[in-house]
Length: 250
Image (cartoon, rainbow, N blue to C red; front, side, top):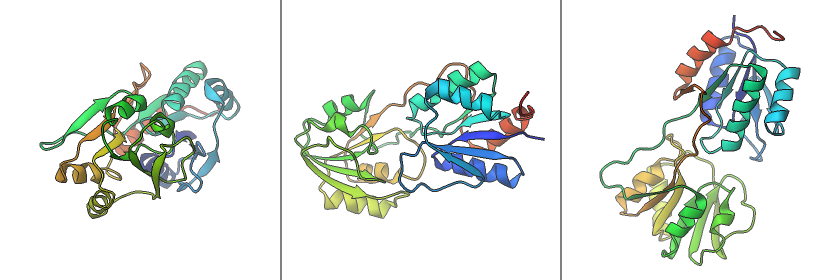
């Protein structure tokens, strides 16, 4: 019998995993960072808000022991992923990283890889109309751009923002027709995004390819060493079944 499982969530994969575990009768606690005003909640118990870094998560694990932790946060939630690795090591809690594969270029794509948002800002400095689809956090890296910037996010972004900014508040998934129309309506010259992977926001890459637009992609941060990684919910379920049998409080 699988014991209680903590799912560090906020992604579609996390919700799907929590749903599948609950359907199997597993006691699940999903943790959301609380950065989105109206998140789509998974089934089972949900806690909202940070733990306070690795120390806070380790303290929570000691006070609310679980059989296993699955880190299914966003591929760019590097701080949470690092905290999970450290806290689980300290408490001896089995940890799995569930992370969707990154995007792969196909013929016709003009992708320009960079290592950071600051690198992305430098890469688009010569363009006049830029589509920033990197999420609302970290937009300060682009504040110095003189280009007209189209920003899309789920919630209103915090300043600083580029001086000429148009904000579109939308939640994916986005269709190819919608992305194509958006790029044309705003006369976008270059798209900036993170290598988030997945299908919910991939249509913008196809639209950019069809319209002959370059895409600046920010590489994913490296994962902590020694943490097993799977790419699918099915593989995560198999791991939980194998590693989630520790009794609470042991």
